[in-house]
Image (tube, rainbow, N blue to C red; front, top):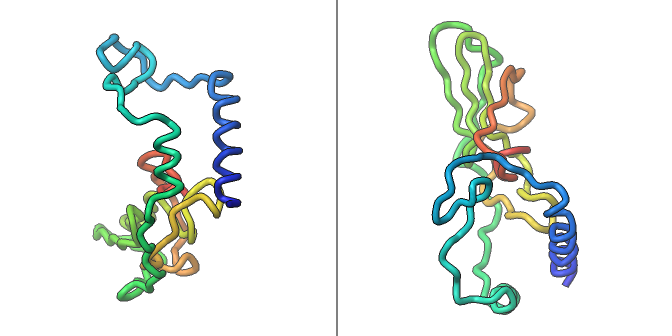
Length: 152
């Protein structure tokens, strides 16, 4: 019940502030699914907001897998200062790339839950392949896009 309360609060806040802070990421020619500033779905669905809400609240939810440890942990060196390239697959889209004395971390995520609040996100099902304490000094963090499961 508490999750529903948080969802409703988030929905009210979103609807309240959505038009106050318009964000335009792209401007281009008008098309059947783009008004020059925003993309939209030109095919109207046959489901109402309330039918979707009812489905979300009454559907049978699958059991989320229990948290598992990785098959093995990686222990990256503090520095790779030659011409070689070392890549550690940490999990999801997180990689540690080391070369020429530079350590690059992509889409870092070490949290147990991804999302704006710990109650509203997806729970991790596999622990990261490199523990946070074992990371070398990071020189560059690369974020591929702004989703919660790519920024920690």
